Amino acid sequence: MNDRRPSTYVCVVTGASRGIGKSTAAALAARGATVVTLGRDPSRNTIACDLASFASIRAAAAEITARWPRIDLLVNNAGVQHLHRTVSADGIEATLAVNHLAPFLLTRLLLPALEAAAPARVLTVSSSLARWGRIDFSDLQQTRRYNGTRAYLQSKLANVMFTLSLAERLTTRGVSAVCVYPGLVATDLLRERWWWRAAWLRPLWRAVFLHPDAAAQAVVAAATVTPPGADCCITLGGRTVPAPPLARDPEQRRRLWDATVRLAGVDYPT
Image (cartoon, rainbow, N blue to C red; front, side, top):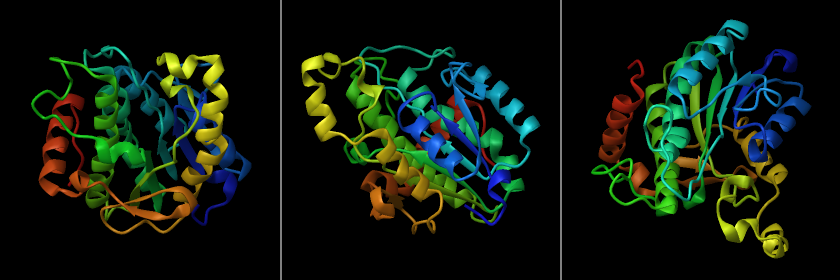
């Protein structure tokens, strides 16, 4: 955290109703920060927001900036993984919409408030599994043949590529952009998979996967460490790891950025 008093340190966390987001929000609040949580359930969040809707994102961003004109930390954490292809309120494949387009749009809309609090930071939660992802520019929304795992891995790679591109664009604006790998975590992200829901397998998953509280520590650490070098991400223990090779390819990043601008309807200042 920067040098401002903890009570005036404002953090925005998406996907804070459960899992990593809920644990991250709790950990930041325990440090004395003002935590603004976003999620679909208004009873569990400061701001109600459906990240599968551009209109809802815009409304939430307007409310946030009206109430908190200075934001020190934005944690883009929310994510989905659908077994079957679904579309967002805007007719976009939902995994791409929530996991990638929503952080792109929300960050852009909150950028003035982040700049007002400089030095500020944007954290985007990805996954070490991003290295297995590929960006299918010929069918970004998987309209021809949908595979939930492939869509998810594409979105996690897109998170890294977005972060690296964002970091380049914000170098003179007092806002750093960092991508974090929180580890393999036991959350409801896999709730559509039968093998995740099976009660008799739950002891195995608890043994293999991290508890959300442990993963949240990686996110909180990434909020305070010195930003990693170009083309790197932060993982457990605050360690720096190289981004996937595809994410380090400037041409791949440029193509994804241009495609994202077309879908999200906004671009960033240069």
